[in-house]
Length: 457
Image 1 (spheres, helix red, strand yellow):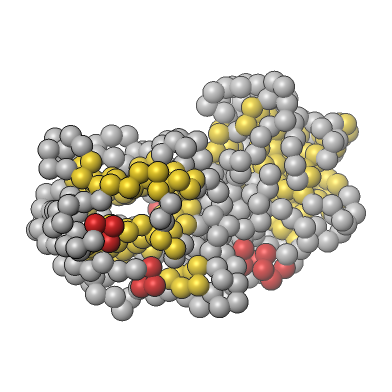
Image 2 (tube, rainbow, N blue to C red):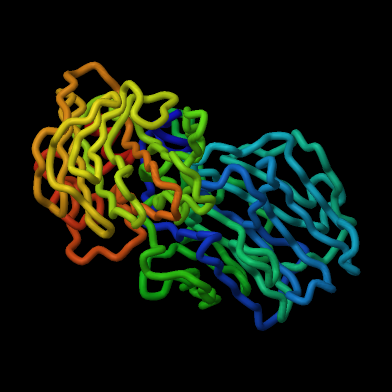
């Protein structure tokens, strides 16, 4: 199933978020900070936006505590069933001082979620001491609801305790997704209206500027706008974060105000012997780490109208079974009806029927695709050279970018919808200034993101 746009993408944008940070569990990516002094451990607010692209595994998003594991710790994670589990151990670290687990599951790999954790353990009413909000609404439907004792000191804002995003203690990082607008307010329990608002026309929750907030001594604001210093705190406190296994290419244009096309983890490969692609690096790299034969996948954005452009850097181990192109929205397998593919042998494969087409391609070649959805015309390119019309379907059909691989060896294929995770040697954007492509975008064609879709789709 392809998706057009997730939460937080519709309506009028009055505040733009330009960049996010990509956290990838395969790379072991995380960011960390150790406070030099203790401030307010009872009252604080954590706010962040995240687009989570892993919908099957447990993922630790926020941690604070001692790395040895013997002392109390603060942990915010998505369980393997994709419920939220917010936990703080008591002083010995052996049981929960507070624990909130939602009944709601968060399984949309395209949606940007706004998370607010608002803490004030001095409150007289226990349920007011920790409050969890998602997209501006407090989560009150909870399968577990254990609240802290009054005046309990959490693991946040404590000297020599480490704060982390993307991992739990010193264990291997587990988070797959993007984060942006990461804020800690030290000394205040704030509600979501300090960080966002509902759009007056669409009702969608969207971000607002946080620059006028009082951050407190240990507070920080990570906007990820400086690619040379992605851990920079811009609150004025200089509470910068250290980076682990994060490169400049992990600065992303995929944000809560402009959502970009990625691979779709929800897609199910419709073949008795086939398997879904594994998606890595923010669901932009398709892999086959389990080395299945006959695997494939599709992207998240349907192309109903408009003109769209994307690129793929081809991986190794293709043999004669690599196919990149488009197919109609819905269940698919190798070579079935509704698929239009450019094969590494140089053939084109349409509805399973193969005919001659263009040049062969090998590992590290870059394929480009320009799809005119208004007229149903797909043109493929190899290393910037047009191979001619791959397909002319006519208008009225809905396609998504897709691929299938027949070989069962490990392969990594790098999809660039304008937001690449690999270095680009040239750098080309579309006519609206969006995207970072290796080759020039054909005139009138655009990168697949929600701002372009709103204008041309």
